[in-house]
Amino acid sequence: MCMPPSHLIGFLVADSMSSSRRRMTMPGLSSRHLAPDRRHVKPYLSLLSQQLNHVMPAEDFDRLQTAAGDTQSSEDGIIVEKSPEALVDLREDLMDSLMPASMCEHPADCGDGDMDDEIQHAPLVDRRMLTRETSLLLPQYALFGFRDWSKLFLNTNAPFSTFICGVQGSGKSHTTSCIMENSLVRSPHLGYLQSPLSALVFSYGQLSGDGMEPNASEAAFLAATSSTLPGHPHVEKITVLVSPSNLGRMENLYHRLPNVSVVPFKLKPANLDVDAMLTLMAVSGPGDGPLYMAQVTDVLRQIAAQGGPFNYTTFKRRLNGCKFNAKQSTMLQLRLGLLESFLDLNNQCPAPDFRPGEVTIMDMSCPFVDSNTACILFRLALRLYLRSDVPGKLVVLDEAHKYMVNVPGARSLKEALCQTIRFQRHYGVRVVISTQEPTFLTDLIALCSVVVIHRFSSPEWFAALKRHIHVAHHDHGRLMQAIESLKTGAALVYCPTAALGKDRDGKLVKGTGRLMEIRVRQRVTRDGGRSVLAA
Image 1: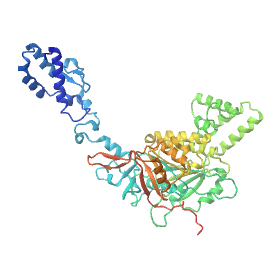
Image 2 (image 1 turned 135 degrees about the horizontal axis):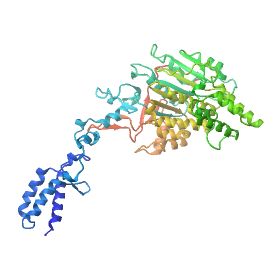
Image 3 (image 1 turned 45 degrees about the horizontal axis):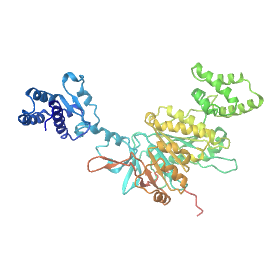
Image 4 (image 1 turned 90 degrees about the vertical axis):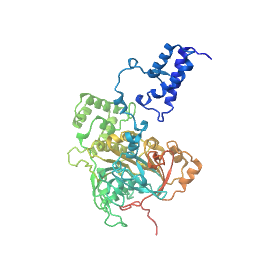
């Protein structure tokens, strides 16, 4: 069959280039790797030259030889010109140096940067990943638990976020305390901790004034030595910030614990700004709240427009110039009274001091502080903490179901926590959320890098979790049964970025699409969450 010379040229060039390309093993190589090998193309044409002489004139055959060196067939079959005059002059040698390691023809020469980054930022790592080769990637880590006769470690060097849920007595508070120990206490029992973090813990319990003694935050027991490990290191200093109206009661509660001091929580007026005032005055958005709050918002807007630091005295003076009826004035004074009870107007209270290796507990348990107000104060404290210059931060929501309920303050705090987790690498912060009730916090579940599931039996809780956890090869009915059967201290852990080892090809094995059943380790400080038994 005869073929027009022009079509034959294109056919042979494309076929020759395809043969050359079939010898390439790595997709996505740079242009210098994909350049046609003339040693293979031109001998191929020479062998055909005698057979083509009776079909193709000599001048057309010369054009074919030139085209073999100046064209290339791309993956989709398009002929790309390679002649110098057809291409823009680029420093492709410099561009090739930016090629991801995963696309390199010889990864050993390029360095496996992608795998190194995954190991360095993995929240959980298996014992088999702790080698001399990874010592620079994982400078500090601590024992978290045991799985399949192997140890699982928490990477405290990189920011992470953990969501812990389960019924009372299932072990969630124990797990939370173990994470805090890993981040704060240097101990050979745990691992390596070169740079301890600081910690801010939110705690709240509804008090009714009926004489029931509140429970101290479980985090306060990190400052006490364990009875099973006498002389073991512990947190050296814990500061508990409490409501000024409940100072005496909280001092009596915490004084029995060593290395714990209780101080009233008061905000410095110098730390206030318009956003903080809107939060404190419980202004959540346009159209929300009583009508007189519109005038308060207008005053704050005027102050913001002028720029400069916020001045509380100026704010009060401008409010006095507004016209309120008697009922509005009474309600406004109630709000201002609550606000001023948490303001250090006389500069008598020390500001919170966040330091590495120390814990600050903000316990707003008070008959006069409801969950809405507690969440507003927590958000302001979180704001101060993130602005502090302490290098490593750990934010802990202890028993979050007690205050993260369907109130405006809780929704505001949840938004702030979502923002914090999204920018956790920027802030250098780790976030731990412990709750019995996960349904209100589903937005946070989706953002967390680690989900720890202790025992529960609620179908609603299970439905809330499975919407945000992709677990392959698990029957939901059997999975629910497995959760119900978990023993105290046992948990199912979902961490898709966990570094669990390497396969035979040297590729990283991660926790994607799997639930790991683990047993959380024992405490190295005093366990304050043990159940009270009758005998």
